[in-house]
Length: 537
Image 1 (spheres, one colour):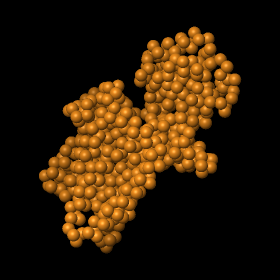
Image 2 (tube, one colour):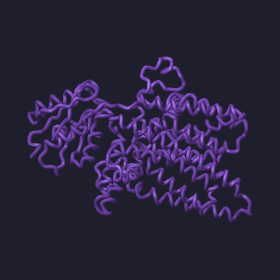
Image 3 (cartoon, helix red, strand yellow):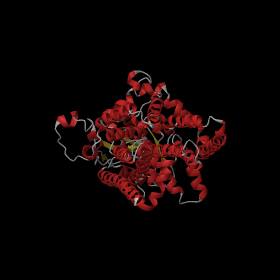
Image 4 (cartoon, helix red, strand yellow):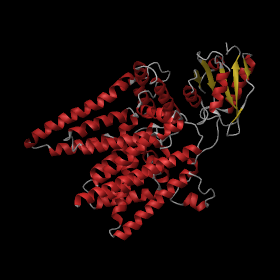
């Protein structure tokens, strides 16, 4: 009877977790159907990589291997971050090739994060805390907002969380299977994005410390030997995944870390705070509280941390090492972007869930609190995702702790940026489809830039090479086509004055003429295309 009761309880928990994931799948599908915004900047480049891998599978094994390794690719900054494009690629065969399908594959990482959060919290505390933690994570704005973006930062949440679960399940490297799985997981973390490294060392060091304290006596010599052997197996598994890509692109990886994460120049360009001044140290904490974890959940996190410390919880060491150690590593970089810190939502959710579970001891009060949290989180999810009620009172929109001030920024954007039409129109004006043509796009907006138009070209298998805002005038005049956007808003690092000067130079050179068709864009501007005389020859 007891075994049947346990099985029934586990089945119920599994169904609840599946319901959470299915709800997000439905909401994300509806959201994507209503949203026309392109996959901007890095997101577009990762999608382009996945498209290239998809087309490479239609050739021989050698072609696919070259595509995975990025051999012959014209760009290199992201080639070592292969996991997200590789995961998306098979789904194009099932559901078709599109940006929406690429984004929907993020549900795999969402599922990993939800299940692994439940598993870790259940292991450290109990099943109720695990369920609450999984739910809180799923309705945290930072989590569900980024689940609709094709970014490795979101994939890192799922991969790092399941990797940490494998590490804990290795029982201080006594279990060989989980030790190897931890190594494989760490390797997958690193080929998702190198920023994932920030979330592993603190927990790893804690586990090594605890393992060392367990194997000090001579009687434990056999266990020490097993520990070191399993640790070597784990390292070998990680190396087998990491080395092929990282060794090939070691210079790129080094330049990305030294030239971006610890770059004073980048810090100055984006006006970022110094790492260890008060504003720099509190940057991520403020982002979590104000926007991406929510003010209520942040308060519940404080409650949970208080109970962990007060009750001398046996598991407080590992959870605080995980949270604080990762936070320190993140804060040591000079470039700060919130999505780098997304995996911290997991320990925050676990501690907040523990606080909720400890607030009341009577079943009725706890049940009422759980119901309140469910309604609160669901309301936060729906109101941040859709314009359910457009005219919310000002006090509710800006002073209530349920929503951040900018919650409307995450509603679907139905504006059509005409990217497919623009690419088709340019392609129709060249007569040799197999010849690569050069296109300059000065505008550098999220929705309208060379990166965005390039992934559309790759998706359509059109051969174009794009120049952006930083191209010198000589290179622009050497292009076959030049796309000029009107209006004041030209995006980052590019001005309307520069756009006007480029258009004037094209006309005065006598080598270009403006194609007759113009494209109206959602911001009220127009995109016009200049073609070099003889470009169709």
